[in-house]
Image: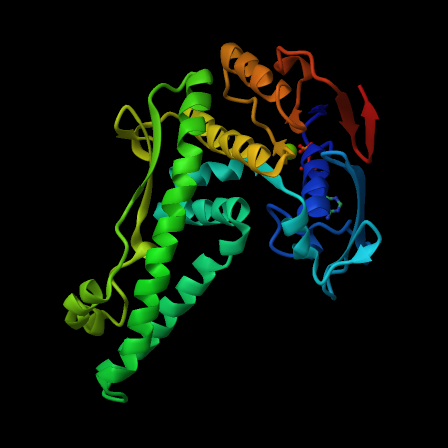
Length: 328
Ligand SMILES: Nc1ncnc2c1ncn2[C@@H]1O[C@H](COP(=O)(O)OP(=O)(O)O)[C@@H](O)[C@H]1O
Ligand SMILES: [Mg+2]
């Protein structure tokens, strides 16, 4: 589906509403006050659609002073974020370029979100691991200041090693699932020899014991997946340092589309894919290749300022003007 409209017409607002309506939160805004219409007390997103052959009806209410509420097919969900476990939506927005351009933390966070979508039962792993590291760091500082003996460290060292090793496994599995599609799709979009792999080894109790002195000095755990890197490269060169803006954009897009394929194959229903302002900085050949890629899969929404920017006939065209969405 192609969504066109002038700058500021409301294309990103529409895309954001679809994200709120299917995931329960905005991909961009930090607070609900930003997404509720200026001057209004609350906002509401009502969606109807189909997932595989089943009808889906969602109703999300946002009230900045209160928690979000969501109903799915008539039933009230425990929290709006529960929608994430029911419906899957992947999004590309220009600020997602940070996944390639930013520091390692941005890539780890991206892979952890993908991990949560691909392995829902392990979705909390990254948070649990981070909590264990936080507890161990606090214990390190207590020991360093003489407030506690070193024995208080043991449970947290064990937890960091166990949860850390599980997290490394899950991240490796996630990347192993994404890498083949990433390479193929990046290639179709003109980026040859693209690779995605995990760089880091599972932490062990022995490894942590071996650097205890240094960890005590710094009050920080200096080993484990909170310090690992996810390498996105082409021909062995890191895209972060050597990729052009266009190549970096293609890489993020290829990651998103690779995940969409994996999710579709696993769940029997393709996720909703939202691509905001993706066509700028892609040349004609790449736009055509992207158009062909997305026309063969589930529902994808692409926004653009110029409908002619997509050299492929969309299945549906919408035109956005301030306050209105109409068929093109
Ligand atoms: N909470 C809000 N309430 C009403 N209008 C808003 C709100 N937040 C942003 N806007 C307005 O929406 C417009 C931006 O729409 P957007 O979807 O980003 O446009 P684009 O079509 O360029 O993607 C801007 O004019 C902005 O001032
Ligand atoms: Mg926009």
